[in-house]
Structures are given as structure tokens and as C-alpha cells.
Length: 93
View 1 (cartoon, rainbow, N blue to C red):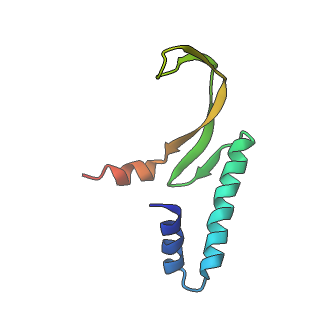
View 2: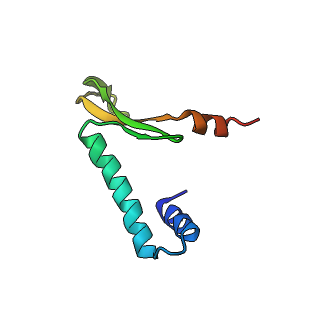
């Protein structure tokens, strides 16, 4: 599902909201999640999962084209841990 499909699904389920309102709601939710992660906080959506960041140490990588060594800086990357309900719904026999 892409963002526009999500907006359409929410709009269809909530007929009293305009398309512009739904787009604003989805944008606000995503912006708040990104802002919390950028501030180093964790975002938990009960039944769905939790977003957090993890640190990656600096390392020496390789340029795949030339094979030369390249310094890769330390960085934070997003991490998602699915919730119990999500895992159970995905693994239904």
C-alpha cells in the first residue's frame, strides 16, 4: 500500500471527512513520527508495533565499482519492531 492508497482507504471508511482533511491527518501523523525519531524518542502504536532508532558505528566500506576502501560515518537508522497482534495476524495458518 502506498500513501495515496492509505488516504483513499481512510477517506472511504470516514465519509464525513474530505480528501484534503484525510491527507492532512496522514501527513501530520507521519511528520510527528519522524520528528519523534529525529529527537531520539520511541514511537509505539499498540497492536501494530514500535519505531525507534539504532546507532551504526563508523566503518570502512568498499566502493562496489572500484573496490577501493571508503570511510562510512556513524549514523542512526530507523528500526521497526512489530507488535504481538501484527505478528500473530501475519502468521495465521
